[in-house]
Amino acid sequence: MNAKSPCNWRIQTGSLQLTRMLDPNRPALVLAPMDGITDAPMRALQGLSGAFTYAVSEFIRVSGEPLPRKVFLREVPELAHGGLTPTGLPVQVQILGGDPEPMSVSAANAVRAGATAIDINFGCPAPTVNRNDGGASLLRYPCRIREIVAAVRESVPAEIPVSAKLRLGWDTTDAIYENAAMAAEGGASWLTIHARTRVQSYQPPVYWEPIRQVRESLGLPVIANGDIWTLDDFHRCREITGCQHFMLGRSALANPSLPVLIAKELGIAREDASSEVDWERLFRTLLAYAEAYGDRIKPRSLMRLKQWLKIAHNHGNFTQFNVLKHAESVEQFFELLAA
Ligand SMILES: Cc1cc2nc3c(=O)[nH]c(=O)nc-3n(C[C@H](O)[C@H](O)[C@H](O)COP(=O)(O)O)c2cc1C
Image 1 (cartoon, rainbow, N blue to C red):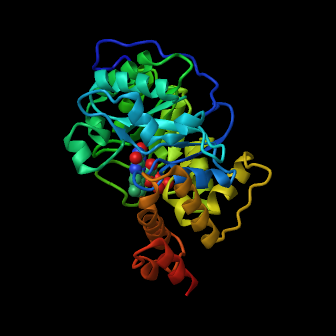
Image 2 (image 1 turned 60 degrees about the vertical axis):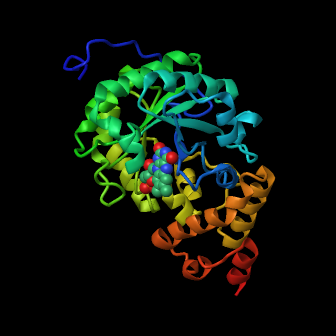
Image 3 (image 1 turned 90 degrees about the vertical axis):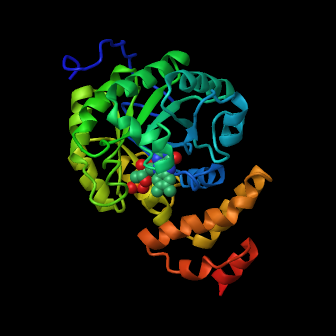
């Protein structure tokens, strides 16, 4: 792959570091970043189950000027607390953008704010993001993926891992081989691969097969992601990809018992991890975290609850969404839930 590379330079990739986030030699279950849903209160809630190894922040967009330290402290309030949720889950900071220079300065500022690992988003399919040279639009320019990863890698201390989150390609699944190789050449510590293209958006099916080839050819840890809805899906994904690292997004919200069941299969569940689900208790705990995070985050609570339940309705067996979506206040939400 490297010999055929259209780019005319390469840098040495660092050796794999053992980190708080991903230990290449140990299975891991990662909470996916979901913009507008997995904010700090939700990350805290997901940390309670004892199933996840770490969480990735919602993407923080770098367009134009580098982002200062205070933006990271605002967007990822865990950074002021050692990068951990109140429930002890480490949080990795994700940045998104197409220009290596402001991306690298922003990453360095994130580390100054307390980030212990950086992830770069090469998968966001949102049209506004893609029109502005960010997220999945970079999948059409493998050399730029390498440049961005390399610039970020060089701007932060060696002990800070820099990872890349990719889709399989823009419109073809084969693009992953070169894009993943470029991210590795840029010095990525590991890759997360959402197993579909930008054009496929979130439509089934997923294509887990290429993940195995990337993992075997690059020798980097690869986190398999996409459409692991059930324990059965997890088993198939593990068999097809050969991975020991997995990321769950929507299913963690649709079926809150799934992360614990998978973590048990992986042998990484905390001793007290329980797969019992009490929806009302989960909602009240989420609100308590939102309250603790203060006035900027608390007002979004009702919207967050509804976004969560929409996913649980569409992809799980939560049946009350059509009633609860009409709630105009948190109080009314619980009245409707009780009714
Ligand atoms: C509402 C929503 C928001 C998302 N936001 C992000 C994001 O900020 N950064 C990112 O890398 N991926 C984002 N994703 C993609 C997820 O991290 C994940 O790759 C995708 O949902 C597939 O995994 P799943 O099938 O387990 O949900 C988002 C997905 C959804 C549904």
